[in-house]
Image 1 (cartoon, rainbow, N blue to C red):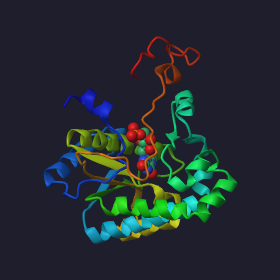
Image 2: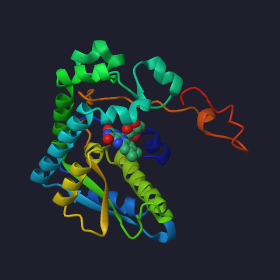
Image 3: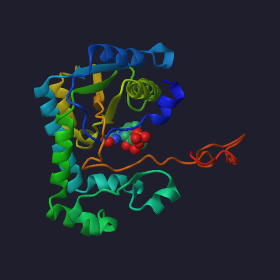
Image 4: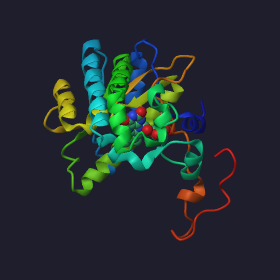
Length: 266
Ligand SMILES: Cc1cc2nc3c(=O)[nH]c(=O)nc-3n(C[C@H](O)[C@H](O)[C@H](O)COP(=O)(O)O)c2cc1C
């Protein structure tokens, strides 16, 4: 597969994976491409933990689902990320960024535009929507053949210092290499970030994975092979929209947006 094609097809998998285990060959390949990423002074600050044990995946899935329920029912999730929520294709077309909530559970659909107001929150809680979403999230994570924990070396990751930025930057490059390679391997990948919204839950995952004191758990991903027919899952907030080059590229100085590149199909 051409690299450009893989980059264009790269996406987040919101749905289930096939139950098949990820072959050892593919696991090694994913780790190789991660390790080939650039890093400041060749520090290679990333570390990975590959998790295939069903019981461990089940425990992490439970934490993920309950974190989602908690962050959604106490309003922190909506409060934190409101600026990125879109409720219509027109709104999405205008901003060309954020997440389009075009697939909410049927009970809240009529109230979609108020879903994230105080009243909407009360209604969602009364209808136990956060519990429904949390349970869907738990099932998705639990059904994944492989979880991947990404850690940073605390000698590099020192919040408040420049090295912290460098190490996060380098980790991002390593993760992007993995992400693009999943396309080539017929695999999908999704960030499991809800436990990070609830610090105690994140700490629980760190304990389960025996993350040592000199490392910091930065991310958990779920990975697996993609089923041939990918129907829209219960939780599927679409975000394939992208800004136009004139919205994020400048020419010469930052006073001049790049024009003439916003061709159709972008
Ligand atoms: C730092 C970071 C955190 C993310 N957290 C989540 C997440 O919790 N759940 C999820 O499904 N996707 C998550 N994503 C994926 C983004 O939602 C996704 O990349 C974006 O919406 C664009 O969609 P695409 O990856 O399909 O192109 C995260 C991505 C990044 C870089």
